Structures are given as C-alpha cells and as structure tokens.
Figure 1 (spheres, rainbow, N blue to C red):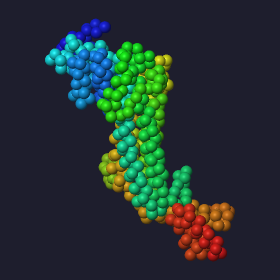
Figure 2 (figure 1 turned 60 degrees about the horizontal axis):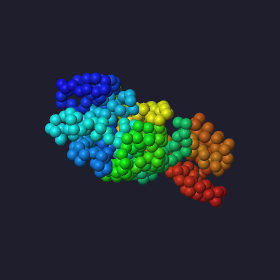
Figure 3 (figure 1 turned 90 degrees about the horizontal axis):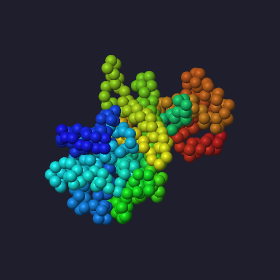
Figure 4 (figure 1 turned 60 degrees about the vertical axis):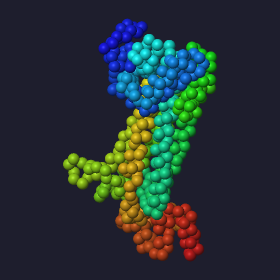
Length: 473
C-alpha cells in the first residue's frame, strides 16, 4: 500500500493502482450501484480523447513541455485502448458533477505519464491538475465527453436501426399477397394485407432512422474550452484554435465549439432531444412487439395469425407451451427506456444556475437506453423478425368471415341495409357473402368480385369493382 496526501489529508492506496487520493475517496463515498464509467460504452474513451487533444494543443502553443505532453498523449492513448479499465473504480452515480471521474482520469494519466518518463508512478514530473488538466475544468470536460459519447453510441444505434428498416422493407414485400383482417379497438375491421400492416412498421422505422441521424448532429457542438462557468478562465492563448482540430483528428467526427459556452454548460436540451428519439424508437418497437404477441396468440384459443419463432420452451409445467419471449424482451426494454427518459428530463430541468451537475445520472440513463436498444434490435431481428411467418389460411379465413365486409354493401345500398346484413350474418353465424346471396342482394358472381378480401385492400381495385356493379345493374 502507498500513502498519498490531498487537501483533506492522507489516503491509503494500493501500490498497483494508477489512480490517486481523489479517486480513492470517491470510490469509498459513492459505492451504490456497482456500475462504473467502464460500463458506459465510449465514455472513458471520450474523456481520454479530450485529455489527449488538450495535451497536443497545449504542446503546440508551447504551454506544455514536449516530453510531458508526449507522455500524457501516450498515457491517454493507452486508456483509450482499454489498458487501464481496472483503474476506474468510481460508481457511475456521484456527487460533484463528474469531478471524481475527471480526476480519476487525470490521476491515471499522470501516474502512467510519470512512469513513462521516470520509470515509477507518482507526480514528480507530471501532475494531474497542473499538466493533465491544463486549460480544462471538470465542468467543460465531462459535458464535452458526454456529447462525444452520445455521438459515438448513436452511430451504433443508427446502424442497427438501418438494418431494422431494411428487414421491415423486405417483409412488406414478402407479405404483400397475404390478406388478413384489420382490427380497430380490438374488433374486426376491413381486410388489409399483412404487407400493408408491415408497411406501417417500415415507414415508422424509416422516419425514426432519420430522426436519430438529425439528433446526432446536435452532439457535434461541445462546451470544451468553457472551463468552470463558461468564461474560459484559465485557458491559454491559442488553446481553442488547436484543441478542436486535434479532437476532430482523434475522433474522426466534426466536433466544434458551442456557439455560446454559457448555454453549453447550463442547458441539456440535446440530451432531451436524443432521449426523446430513443424513447420514440422504444415505444414503436414495443408496440410492434405487442402486435406480434397478439397476432401470435394461441395456437388454439388466440388469433393464431403469426408463427413467432420458437427460441426456448415456455413453461416449467405445461409441455409444448412456447412463449413469445423475444417480443416480451422488447416490451420490457421499452419500459426501462421510458423510465430513463423521465430521469433525464428531471435531471435536465434540475440544472440550477450556471451548471447542470446532474450529468452522472444523465450519463447512466441515456447511455443505458441507447445500449439496450443497440443490443436488443439485432436480437429482435435475428430471433423474431427474420423467421416470422404468417398463418396464411387463418388470416384469409378471418378476412372472409368478417362482418365488416358489409361495408361494401353499405357503399352500394346504404348504411341501413349494410347494418342489417352485418347483424344477420353475426346472429346466424354466416358470412356476409352467404347472407347477401341468400337474400338476393347480390348474385354469386357479383359477390365473388365485390366481397373478395384481397380486392378490398386495394382502393383502385375496390372502386373498380363498385363501378363494374353499377354498370351491370
């Protein structure tokens, strides 16, 4: 064990630890969730990228000795390569607006940089605050890292949503000739095709895909350089002009300075926007999953319109029972994402005066939601959507037997007669076709083309059928 002294006194730290006193105090103070910054994809990478860009910028403006700058750059790069993940032990929930995470990074990089230069840890040459944190504050580093993390994680989510869009587009084509019964208020409605149903899913996904792309653009503006409250106090001349080009080169993304640093530190509307788009995606996926569960219900006492792929046994007591576990997974993820959205909303609203200090809970919830959907969508595609099949016979039978086919009779003969036909069909357990032929309302030939469920799914075809009837009458 080694002893390190900070402004509050002595702290005992393991000899092999690259972190220091501030990290150890925070580790003990905030041990609540068991989750650390390491568990947030791309977050530590983003903080380290900022430290590397800052060192390069400070070296270019001759504020940092080249040997120290190079050691910091190497140490930060090694952190980005996950070589020091075990040295970031602080809980993701923490007071202080992320100061503990920023200092954890400063200490790890400083110790490693000293080791590179001198062969041993310690702050003899490189100091975590003086050198690693030069021209920076927790208050601009952490919000900037959040936006970089958001940018990178959204890119992964956008990719899987793009794949979902393509799969749903193909299903729309594959199911184009499967006629089925639509339902409104969980009651029988007029016929549609399964392809038309899936076209709704496809176009919703297409819009959500584009909305995520647009939301991601908001993450390109960073408050890096604002330092403590937006004034840029303690930055050096030329720093801003050099740090952003370095950050762009490191990340490959077009990051620029916020138009107004005070806005950048005070307000979190970008997170609200991103969270809203993620919530919209989750809500849509859950709705679609619920549709599949309803349409796949049965097999003998439900709708039985869809064959949902069986991926595991569904009961410990009922042999042969198969549950729609993948759609149920999606439902539960949506509930979590919706709850996270509320947490983000409250955290953004609660940012008082000149800085939002609730960044830790935003980091935890926003990137949890993003990660859940990024991981779940491929599972939903591969274990449900790809092999989802229609029960064609059942779908057509429901469409043919629906009393809603009386809508055509209402079009031809008025609503009163249409209602009488529907009621008679229901009460006598007959089809609309059987009733209209028996009552002499239509001939069998007329019923064939007027009451064909597939024709009813096409507005031009159904209009042509009505026109044909009028010509023949």
